[in-house]
Structures are given as C-alpha cells and as structure tokens.
Image 1 (cartoon, rainbow, N blue to C red):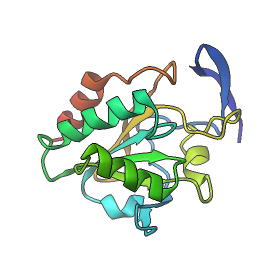
Image 2: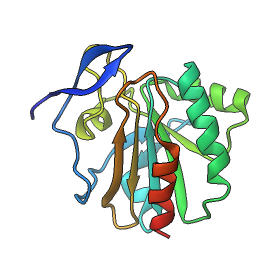
Image 3: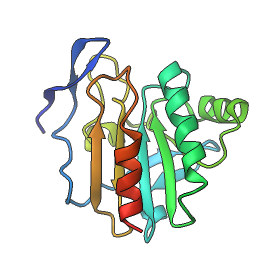
Image 4: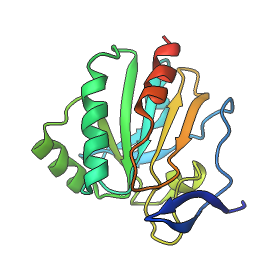
Length: 171
C-alpha cells in the first residue's frame, strides 16, 4: 500500500496520507467505527441509502465545528434516504459531548480511534499527525463511491455545493 503526498496540506505544510486512496466509481471499503455509545458502525449499516462521510481532524476545531453544523442543517432537507456520518479520531465521548453542546442531531459520528483502519483504507489518515484529513465522500446505496473531495488544505472548508449536488443527484 503506497502512501501519498501532494494531496493536501496542513497549515500550508505538506503532509503524507496513508494508503493509496479511493477512486470514484469503485466499491467503498467496509469499515468498523465506534459510535457515541461505543457501538460498532459499519458500512453495511447504511445499505440501500446514500451515505455522506465527512472526515475531519477533530470536532473540537473551529473549521470542523462550522462544517459539521452546516451539514447538520443540510441533513434536514436531504430526506430519509440520506445519512451523514462524521468520522474522526476523536474518542466517542468527545463526539457525544460536542454534539450535545452544539445541538447537532441530524448527523452521526464514528470514531476511528480504536484501530485506525478507516483512515488508512479510505486514504485520509495523515501520517505526520495521526488525524484524518478533511474530506467529503458520498457512497451510494450499493456501496459505490460516487463523489470524493479531499480538501486541498485541511484548515479550509469543503465545497459544500458540489458535495450536496452529488447527494441530490443520487436521488
């Protein structure tokens, strides 16, 4: 598995992403994350529905806060066939605390803290920090990756309009 450079930066500095990364049109790898109650969250839990995966460095950073709140608001208008899952290296307890304090109820959270396999398998784990790069991935109901943005600078917000257009295109 080859690591990659030149995909994203962190505060202007080059970083290395673990793994080969994904290609739009391929099957998304299965994953095992932990929800806020330490229960397992897997890709198969979302079969038949569109899944928006937001990978962020930490819910406790300013840009992540803005991004998650925006997708939480957007989720209300996307319908019951769309799920949004925020994936980070944060402990499940931190995600629960943050979501409660922020009033975030329309998106779920998944922690990759325990085995780091999501970040490696999806090609978004930053080797220099151990955090996940900021990305938006849209997986259709058949488990196929239909949209991917790895944000060019981790400290910047994603292209909300392009991500939401990809979701709406899936129906």
